[in-house]
Amino acid sequence: MLQIAGLCKAYGDRPLLQTLSFEILAGEIYGLLGPNGAGKTTTINLICGLLNADAGRILIQGQPVAAATKRWIGVVPQENLLYRSLTCAENLAFFAQIYGLPRSIRRQRIQACLEAVNLSDRAHSPVESLSGGMQRRLSLAVALVHQPQLVILDEPTTGLDIEARYEVWQLIRSLQRQGMTILLTTHLLEEAERLCQRLGILKQGQLLAEGTLSQLRQRIPAKEIVVLETADEAAAIERGQQQGFTPRRYGSDLAFWIPETLDLRQILDCFAGIAIDSVSRQPVKLEHIYIEITQAQQRRSPAAVSNESTLIGSNQIYLS
Ligand SMILES: Nc1ncnc2c1ncn2[C@@H]1O[C@H](COP(=O)(O)OP(=O)(O)OP(=O)(O)O)[C@@H](O)[C@H]1O
Image (cartoon, rainbow, N blue to C red; front, side, top):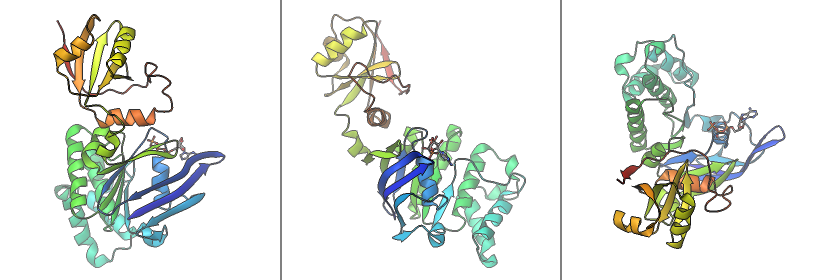
């Protein structure tokens, strides 16, 4: 559906995208992940034809970006681009007109789009009276009005509460069921883990890794991750390494990759003689993989692991 090959883009003399290449298959949800400033929105703007590349190629259904390909794409930008004083139906009518939808089908498309995002009962409500979640759903309806084949969602649930987020996730899945291809950027790794079939991890304009979750998971050869709280971290790191555990720091947590499944008693036995205040065990999650990939360059030694703060949920077991 979408092929990107050798894409380069600089802002002034500052290179941003550096020979970026990836492909999105028809019907999949592809997650483009990466830290702030990695180049995700720039990539989206290039796909939409809002920016011109310095080098490289973008093909949408085999066609280079042009007026025709723009009609195949629906975009939900990071910020909702809605007319706040107009109603939901009026906003959709405006964008339907911009896309040149014939008057004869406009009304029916507007109704279908409102229905698709569960806003039929708010058709005549002004945007400014809608909750944040409803406004986000209306943005999605706007992106669908011209029946695109590729839907691009730039951080679709940032700032939404959990219920609104679930609703948007449900909508995204229903778009996929209807045969649409979806490119999604997000900082919410749980969102990516739940929705995306394949993921690309972008940093400083380069794709550091790409694949399904299970392919990316191979970056961490561990059955589980154990987080220890101890006053004697140096001794714990040394002991962990002697046991074949790989130490990592996630935020302020000292963690170890455990290559086999051990019960709590076996874990404690491995650290016998070291005062351990608590042990928590976690499955390997996308958060761990993402940190491993994006911080690989910064890591100097196993103990000097990153201080970048990332919180990872845990089932903490406190001892005594
Ligand atoms: N028009 C522009 N002129 C100059 N620099 C720009 C322009 N647009 C973006 N940048 C810079 O390019 C870098 C990448 O921006 P971009 O918005 O593509 O990143 P991103 O991965 O989407 O980040 P975020 O996750 O914060 O949205 C940033 O440092 C940004 O400040």
